[in-house]
Amino acid sequence: MNTAKKLQQSYTYADYCQWPEDEHWELLAGVAYAMTAPTRLHQDIVFELAGQIRNYLQGKPCKGYVAPFDVRLPCKDEADDSVDTVVQPDISVICDKTKLDKLGCRGAPDWVIEVLSPSTALKDLNTKRNLYQRHGVQEYWIIHPEDRWIMVYLLNSQTQYGQPDVFGMDDPTQVQHFPALYIDWAFMQEM
Image 1 (spheres, rainbow, N blue to C red):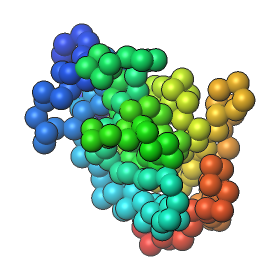
Image 2: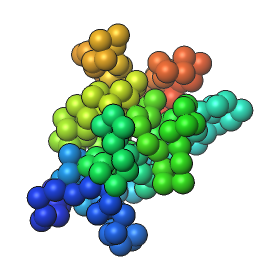
Image 3: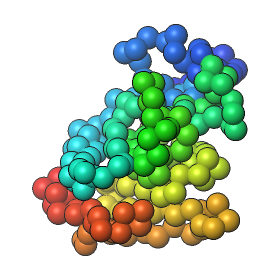
């Protein structure tokens, strides 16, 4: 199933804030994409990862959030009403608390995790990867639950993602932004 688009040619955060709260959308360069309900496997993975990340972050200055959680990605000093890119990553970790406000996050999280779904795979692998690179997400993980691999993009000194590292889920995966944190994939054995 493809992610549905709204019909108008271009939207901003001001439009987005007027939509019903029980509908979940993302704006990518002004194009609105409906967020379909995730599968149980998708939610199981997000829940487990969020727990491991939460445990690690306790007592540290960074905060983790799960979707739905609005991440506004403005251009330079763009006013919120004019922002045309709002994403809801499956998991976001933000270490700069000045980016957090009552609406969510304004600016790039330090670490973003997206769990692939058939309806979002192309968007996560291409559009969002380019978007996260452009806005400065330091570490971007893409998780393929069916094939059981993790693709990790790291922002280099030229603010580009180089070739991704791809890992299986047989061994824990180290988080580069938090070198003491290893994600343990043992829970995947039960799924």
